[in-house]
Image (cartoon, rainbow, N blue to C red; front, side, top):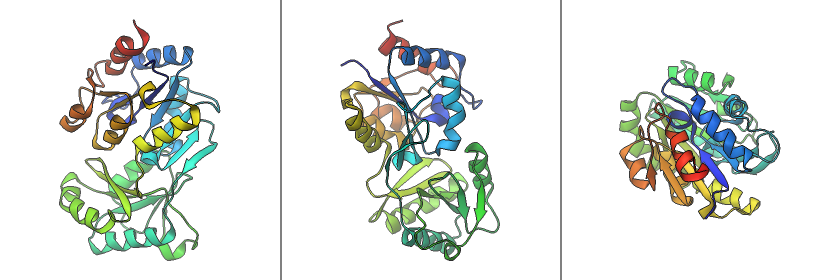
Length: 271
């Protein structure tokens, strides 16, 4: 089938190890845009943390889309909400209490891209998270927030060792009610049940009249596997995990070696 929609993870996929988009990637994506393809950044970040990359790529307007918070929110590049699946105040309270009991750094993110934590001693990874996403940080207890306050996701952060030790307990506590995704070595995320990047892409495709076989996705990590399983052509970066590569149809060069440009040239553009 002809590819009509291409989804990109951001960290270690769209971005090089220097945290920039390679010129070769920008050129290849702009060629795809010129041919009328949909370019969808599919990420755990909020729209505020994605906007600079969209601008660099030249992805604009109300007819291009972004999947944020690992599938929780789908919106247009201009910010019009398409689909959302939020967690209510009770879920927010339960996660915060679990984090305190297990002494795990924890924050939530609301649909407006604000990071909220009950931790008075803010973990460095929360600061990094806020910086990368151009987000503000509020220190608040759940009791200080309105009863109708809903979150896009909860995020357990810390060192890789901390999360390795805690991951099973988090899954046991929350998997019956929520989706739990290891979004990176230092991020363990809790979202609405059944939500992931793959389901978000399929729902968007239904709205746009794009079949799964007409979609391609690029990724490198565990939270990209659902996206890989959903689309017709899954491309893992050469720097990706072994698990990601095993789930992919194609393994391209790394994010420092023009991996996206090379795959688009051979699989989409015919260059």
